[in-house]
Image (cartoon, rainbow over all chains, first blue to last red; front, side):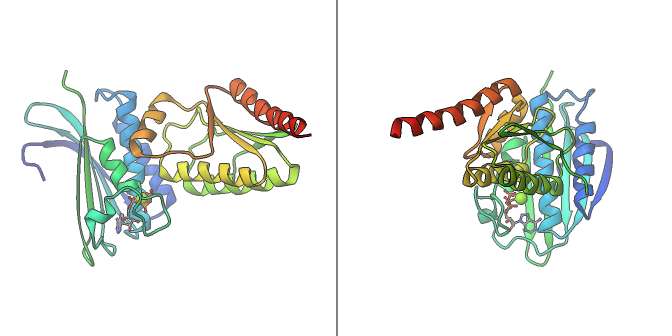
Length: 143
Length: 128
Ligand SMILES: Nc1ncnc2c1ncn2[C@@H]1O[C@H](COP(=O)(O)OP(=O)(O)OP(=O)(O)O)[C@@H](O)[C@H]1O
Ligand SMILES: [Mg+2]
C-alpha cells in the first residue's frame, strides 16, 4: 500500500459468478464518471482492465473480492484504485503469467499483460497456495 | 434463455448488440450465428457493436471465433460501429481480430458484404 495516497471512499463486491463480473464493470463505469476527469479512452481502458482481472479472479482464483477506492496522491491528483483478491491456487511463475499469450485456461493470455498496459500502475502478488492480489490504479490527468 | 436476436436479410445475417455482452450471452450468440449460417446457407454476417462500451479478451475471442466458424461455413464476417475508444483499448490490450473485416457503419458494412459475395462470383466467372 502506498502511504502517500489517501482513500476518500471505497466499495467492494464479492466475485462468485458471471453476474458479479457485470457488477464490477458497472461499478467501475459509474465511479469513473465526473467529477473524476477521465477521458472516454481512459474510462474504457479502466473498465476493460477490470473486466479482465475480475474474470481471472472468478475463473482461476475460484472467486474472490473486488475493491474500488477513490484515491488522492500527495500532489492532490485523483484516481481510482482497483484490487482483485482471491485465495485460489495462486500463480507459480508470475513472470511467465505476465507474458503476452501465456495461458493455462485456453484463453488468449492477454488479461494480465494487457491490463498492465491499460492503466497507470499495476502490481501483482501471488504465491502457490496463498492466492493472488492484483492492484491497478488509473490516475486522472493533472489539471 | 437470454439471447441476442439475429435478423435474416436475404443471404446475410444481421445482429445488433444492444445489451451488455456478458460471457454466456456471447457464447450463445456464437452458437446461434453458427447454426443460422449453416441452416440458411448465409454468405455473410454483420455484427453492429456500436452499443458496446468495451471489448475485452473474452468478447474479442468470441468475435474471432464467430468469424472463423463463419469462414468455414463459407460466410464473411463484418464488424461495424466500433467506438474509437474501444478500438484504441483493443490495440493496447493486444487484441487482434483475425478474419474479421470492419466498417464504420451498417450501410458500409453491407456494401462490404455484398462486394465480398459479388467478387467471389466474378472470380468463378473468370475461372470458367
Ligand atoms: N487470479 C489468478 N489465480 C491463479 N492464476 C491466475 C490468476 N490470474 C491469472 N492466472 C494465471 O495466469 C495466466 C494468464 O492470465 P491472463 O489473464 O493473462 O490470460 P488468460 O486468462 O489465460 O487468457 P485471457 O485473459 O486472454 O482470456 C492464466 O492462464 C492463469 O494460469
Ligand atoms: Mg484472463
